[in-house]
Structure formats: structure tokens, C-alpha cells
Length: 188
Figure 1 (cartoon, helix red, strand yellow):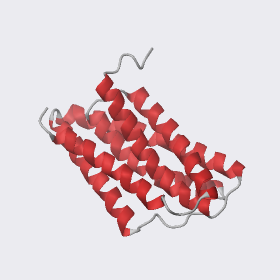
Figure 2 (tube, rainbow, N blue to C red):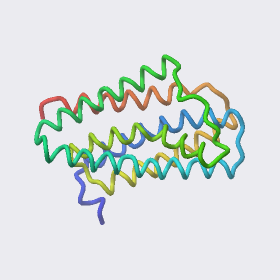
Figure 3 (spheres, helix red, strand yellow):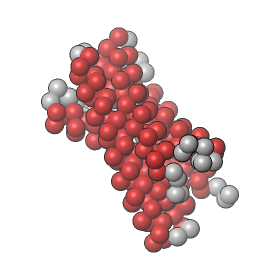
């Protein structure tokens, strides 16, 4: 089985990063769910986010592998720095109250644009993981599954609860990415 060939530390790192990016999707979907959304639209939005959470890190990993071949060992430092910057930006944006703006998720184009905006962070993380040479299939599977799952949970919870958790989900995800970035930078 392909999971057993992955070192436990790398497996845990990928799962925690996928969860961190899933929290970002969760918090944004929570906001959409609060405004009211039909079950069919929840499924469409979550599936689109899952697909983008597969495609974006895949492109990122391929870019990171390419950069790693060119730059060599310095890419681990670059990967850590990229995660630190991305995590810090997510935390800052969540407390600053910035958002990607309202996108009409009732249309296919709006849903794709929303899914892209939610998944841009997973491209950057994918670049870092590609430079770090993480397991590609495990990464995109975990990112896609957790991105889609956290999206549907955010939409459903938003439909039922309210706005209390939205900003904290993105902050938690950013803090996790920031932590892993610092760990990448520490001498090994």
C-alpha cells in the first residue's frame, strides 16, 4: 500500500498541512453558509474546492520539484521561508478582517473563482512540499479530501450556527503553516 512507504513524520506533516488548508476553506465556506445555501449548491461548491485543492498543490509540487532540481539544497530554506510568509499572511488577514470579497457561488464561473481563491494557498504549500520532495500522491489526495470535507462542514455549520468561528479558522490554519515553516528552517 502506498501510504506505508511514506515515513511517519512526512505523513503527519502532510496531514496537518492539509488540515490547516482545510481550515481556510472551512472558514470561507462558513461565511457563505451563513447567508443560506441549498444542499445541492453545498455539494457543488465542496466538490469544486476539492478539485482545486488537488490541482493547485499538484502544480505547486511540480514547480517545487523543478526549482529543487535547479537550486539544490537551498530549496529547503526557500520552502520554509515560503511557509512562514504564507502562514503569517493568513494569520494577519484573519485578524485584519480582510476577505476575498463576495463572489456569486450560485453560478459555475463564480464557484470556480471562489474555489480558486480558496485554493491559491495550497499552490504555495505545494511548491514548498515539492522543494522538500514530499510524496506527491499522498499530498494531493490529502489536500483534496480534507479541502472538500472541511468545505462541506463549513457550509453546513454556517447554515446552522452563525459567524462566530469564521475568522479563527483561517488564523488556526495560518498558525499551523507558520509553525511548519519555522520547523523547515531549523537545522536538521
